Image (cartoon, rainbow, N blue to C red; front, top):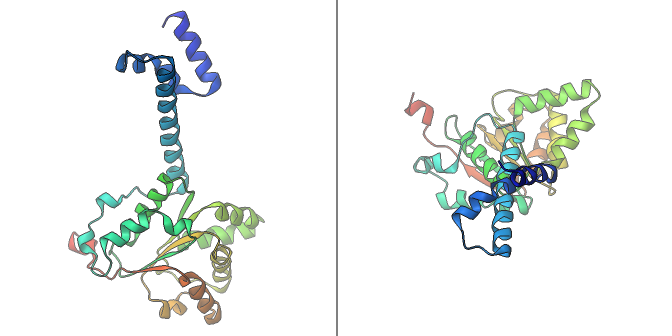
Length: 241
């Protein structure tokens, strides 16, 4: 680099506008730019770069176990849900409207894939997302309470525009865990959104939680203005095992 290029690189680093160091590439692509057009082009590149980096950061912070997309999802396997309805959810209007999405269906029917894919779309749309299995979230809450950090964790969860609770099915929760999970979900009621995937229909949630009254209240709050997807489909894992 010549002296001027080094100065530009130094200023770009100090101003935190790394795309400005690529100004020569912009000039090569569009040699006839006037000063204003060149400035617009280089600023547009910086804006796109920042947007892409922010999306990557939100996806990383969400804690997805893997990255799944709607493009990879086999919609032909959905027997009770229209593909157009899923794409409508992918617009993230349900998050803007503070609504919930509840996926109820048998194991291997694509609930986790769909939950992650909608979560990634939310990250790409600028929303903050947190993903956790129900068992992991219950453990996190109990441990946070034991270490006097429950309030801190609850505030972190409240900051998420979308909380995804996966696999609310496999384990039963004791009264202590039930109360902590209930509070997390209750605090989000009509304030922010949650996606929950479960193998059990709502009438069987008493098999998961000890307190029937608490369970009824939980279901009532979750299903209010919610999108309930019947995901009782053939198991992808069994068909491809």
